[in-house]
Amino acid sequence: MSEDHEGHGPGGSPPAAEPSQDWLELVYEGVLEPVPWTLLLERLRLHLQANFVSLAIRSPSADDPGQVVFAGAAVSGTQLAYERSFYALDPFVDLPSDRVLMLHECVDEQQWLDSALYRDFLSALDIRHVMGADIRISAGQSSRLRISRGKQGAPFGESERQLCMGLLPHLRHVLRIYARLDDLESERRLYASTLQCLNIGTLLLDAQGQVLQCSEVASQLLTGEHGLQLLAGRLHAQAGMDERRLWRAINHVLEARASHSAELVEAVSLSWAGKGLGILLRGLAQKECFECGLPAAVEVILRDPQRQPEPSEMLLRQLFLLTPAEAALAAQLCHGQNLEQAAIDLGISRNTARAHLRVIFSKTGTARQASLVQLLLGSVAALHPLAAQKT
Figure 1: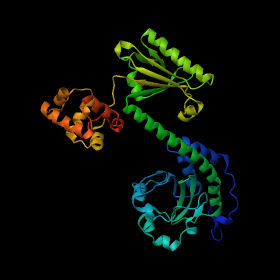
Figure 2: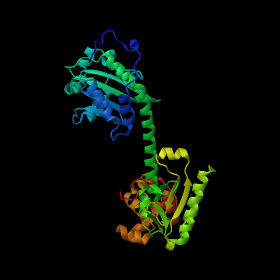
Figure 3: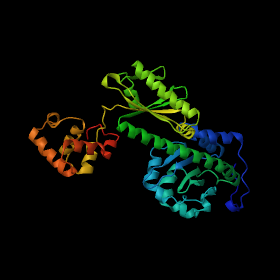
Figure 4: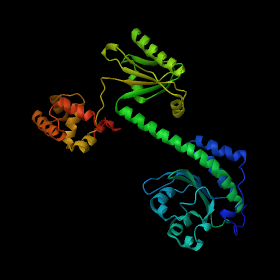
């Protein structure tokens, strides 16, 4: 399969042929695999008679392990060892974008064989010949395709370079899509965790009012205890008047969205036994539906006015220079307890609690318990994902 590589350089290579349909399917459908592009890399490994093929979707760096997909015989600890010790020694990095190069075109082969990277790491893995490309995704971001053969194999040839060159434009296109989807997923997780810290539940409804997605906090609020529940995939208020008001508001939002009117927001407060939820309904634009990946039409935001965010004691200590004992007392006060109740729960005397409170007032610049609680609940300490846990 290999051809003699003498006399061939990337600048003089003939134009790459368009890959066949089966190769393109592996490229474009690979984004949907549980571990993306596993089938593509394994097909490349077998077709090129390689021992390893890797795709660094997000390249490793000194402070980021990156995201690397790998085909070949797994060797425990290989990737970790490379990221921690050998990445900085690798000469076959930062290649010219979107060109397939051979190792010998970039590095003197004897220097390569004498290098610590080869001697202490790659030789044990039987990696001798390497072909690869850096694929530009965006400014400052690139992915890396690397293919290797062992000592008994021949150097990679020109026909093998051309196969990879043909795949590069398609890989670049789909990797850009994947990077955007990854960014959206990161934003979604951040948004969801922040809402969870604030005890805010969210749901997505389709154009028929059916629930498509329900957050963890929303599930906790839809038990019926607060006058709202989920039955057969639809929201139902338990009081007749609340039910009519809720669905009148949902239908108003859906009608406005269908007629492409200005964005409509409706608010409903349930009257259930003094424990009713506050509900905000917002029509979603087509762009938002595409980004969430669902045929969503309405976002529903639920808030229980009786549930307050609970600040992290660790962050209270960092923000206001409180001692552990002072932070513990401050957190108890944020839970709605008075000073006497907080002292009992913490196992300290009332006088000790008063002394702690005086110091907390001094450090936070407040003079009243109500002002203190307002300050603490309004701080970023209430946004910590583990805010409800004792630290």
